[in-house]
Image (tube, rainbow, N blue to C red; front, side, top):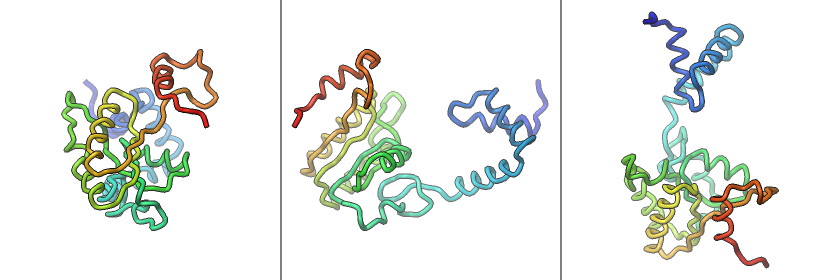
Length: 199
């Protein structure tokens, strides 16, 4: 059995990151210690501050160092649109790739009874409050096309019926510039079933 050391502790700690195995963690640790100690110190400080100060926005549940995130504080956004996403990273992606100017609600996952994730864990009561307190004309569901993501979208669709708001689902299917022969059958079937009229 190996004697515990600071080096091994650093390597083991780096393995908590997604996609980082033992070799990658070891390579990162040696890089920081041998070639970029200043970068390692900046990383340690940034991690320490982020872990201590970043929580969830009380309105939309995205990650924020403030009680209410910068998007929820914006007065130039359209409160009649509410986009439901699974993760805070989805908010960032949509903000960078689209011209959407409504508000968001972050579930923090998707319904998965086998994993013990039910409506309570996803903040559905908080979503219900958002729908009740403001006039949402369109609720946009931007969950994944996994079985759990579809089940989550279906559940929220039923919830939205109580608040008389129009519910839409983001389109899924053939990627822009994609050729049909290279698209997997599940994606192609979903795209074909979701076809719409051309204007």
